[in-house]
Length: 181
Ligand code: IMP
Ligand code: MG
Image (cartoon, rainbow, N blue to C red; front, side, top):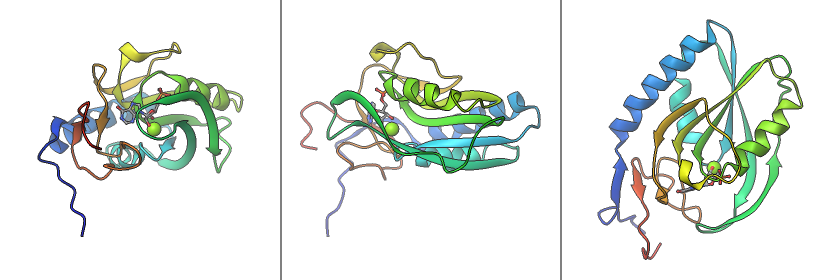
């Protein structure tokens, strides 16, 4: 049986640090909603872990939806083009929508989604990202809620992948250059 070796990986944020920060983010998002309902839209697959944990830290009536986009093909390189692979299941007109993303990197994905969703005239449209790499931005876009702002590192774990692997690492780890993958 294949075993995932994690000893060689440096932990950037531990599962406890992630959990603590998500509790704070959930409290802030709940306050900002003033008791109104929320639709959380997760960006598959990376944001799945974050959405599940964040939703339990938000104390308002919330429903989920998911979209899938392709931006990164295989490995660490982006093609630059964003394509919608799975659309929303339910219309979001008049709703308070929170896009939930794992990493805001070049901003191409979230700029694309924001523009797409605004065409449906939601009541409010906000963005929560667990990680933000502001130094990598190509499109001008900011998240309303940021878990951690990080330098230009490639990270894996807690939903984030390298060529689809490592999503199930419980901590956020640094993928070192030269790592065999
Ligand atoms: P953007 O469109 O460049 O902002 O990139 C968004 C997507 O790229 C994220 O949702 C991630 O799926 C992926 N991505 C960016 N940086 C990393 C990383 O360090 N590790 C894993 N995936 C990443
Ligand atoms: Mg992603």
